[in-house]
Image (cartoon, rainbow, N blue to C red):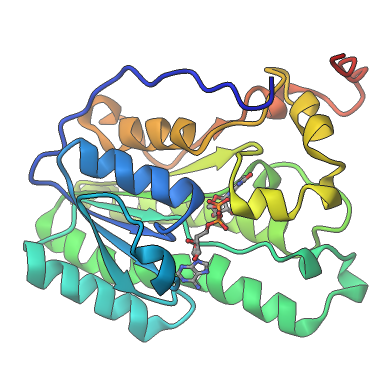
Length: 267
Ligand SMILES: NC(=O)c1ccc[n+]([C@@H]2O[C@H](COP(=O)([O-])OP(=O)(O)OC[C@H]3O[C@@H](n4cnc5c(N)ncnc54)[C@H](O)[C@@H]3O)[C@@H](O)[C@H]2O)c1
């Protein structure tokens, strides 16, 4: 029940489009990079994990990048433009949620706070800052920020991750408004629990896999490909009137009130 994955049926043609996906070496970013490449895009996968880069799918080219370092982000954008002549899609996806970030604020080590701000907030800003310059010149482009259900609603002991995910939603709105008349669209996607390394590392902190799955009205944890499907749609011309908004891809999690009776645990 927790791992069933509906097949994706919609096909997009991204031939000759150029995409940058941060955090493309694993999880959701991997699935997004793979889906974009399969649909014909030239994809740059910007990630810190050089070892995992060996396993990137065909069509995704690795560039080493620590998104918390502004110069790395500038170099990724410049290299992409040199290689392909422009940028059509930026997916800001690289983020961290280390187990040591599960603290109420007064117990949160400052080092952990700075690390999360660096990757999860500044990283999105740096990548967008350089991509937006190019997209404005082109008068076209789409940016998708991967935010989170935790950017909308919070829980105990996520004193830093949730507030920054909320900021990812607001970054998208601000950039959307700022650059709308330049032909750019900027949106965010807020996943519920999705099977990835990041989620597996935090299973215990969230009550275990079965309990997390059961909190989602659809009764399961999502798959990275289900986020990729949403991103491909939002990046396509089928979503041409969609900007400055957030799409919750969460199996109904956000619709389910905390005061409601929980679903009975499946046998
Ligand atoms: N998995 C979930 O349940 C879930 C739910 C909601 C939101 N999200 C969001 O989805 C996104 C992807 O999460 P995931 O679960 O696939 O994570 P993951 O940990 O499985 O993969 C993250 C990838 O980012 C890379 N990365 C980490 N730090 C980096 C840095 N400084 N610079 C460049 N790359 C870096 C890692 O090497 C890895 O390849 C994140 O923004 C996360 O907040 C995930």
